[in-house]
Length: 325
Ligand code: PCA
Image (cartoon, rainbow, N blue to C red; front, side, top):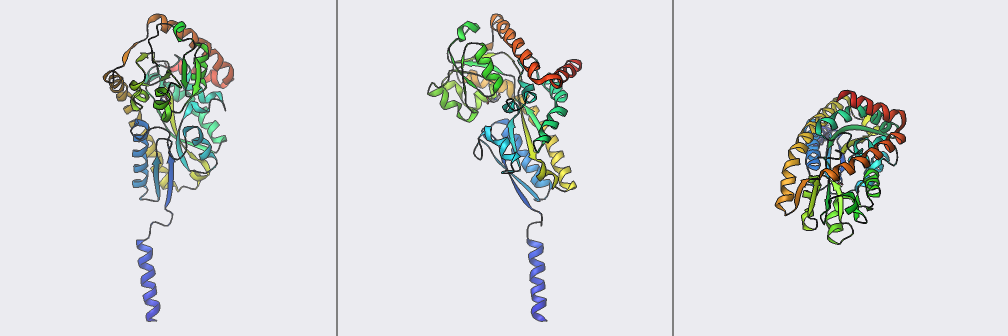
């Protein structure tokens, strides 16, 4: 009897000191550097969930593409290799044109408009993701996209033959239409690509140029405000359906706060990083009217191409966005 009592006491002790019965660790791959505002937002989201669920779900972020490079993150979540992760939405435009809704040149060129476009597109995107075993948690925009070059350019004619780093279908198409030579390179790899001359230009935000210190190789940033692409955080739908209602409420609340905080950071980061590029020695200025006009023509071509590819669903998103403007 004594022995049994001892055993029971020991078991009780183990039960109270052990981790909660349902404790799970969720590794969360992210493609951009740890100091990037999306990664900082993701780390805060992870802490919020870990604290809010009292450790029942512990999210551990892996920035810089250290667990999976950007191009593999969505598939890794779909197939259950990891439960959660962050990816550039337009990285999947080759699967479905709807994913490219945020990279249509000159459609939504401010944070306010990017927000309206997101609201208009979200139901269709959630539906496509659900068909792929994915549940959307939150999304944060990048700052407006401008053009980086090693050498000065004043018109589209000056761009001919320049090696251009692309990050999705739209950026590769932009290169084609401007006579440049696209090469796809992840953000984590661009410093080296510019240093070694694999590429001499790109379209991106001031944020990415700043994060990757591109002033070490490039000299010009033309503010074009072509579009504001987005990152989004998704969870495997089967994993999600196994989460308790109480923990789902925590994750959803943390996601809402992350979307808000991340968007605020993106806005703050816009001016800060452009100044950072200047401080690094780059020429930062709005594109000339000639260049803007030429790019707008290319934008019109790309808009027509996107509408063609995205069909009725795409048209209704653009119509709903324009009605909200
Ligand atoms: N930075 C990312 C995507 C958009 C942006 O501003 C990149 O250049 O890869």
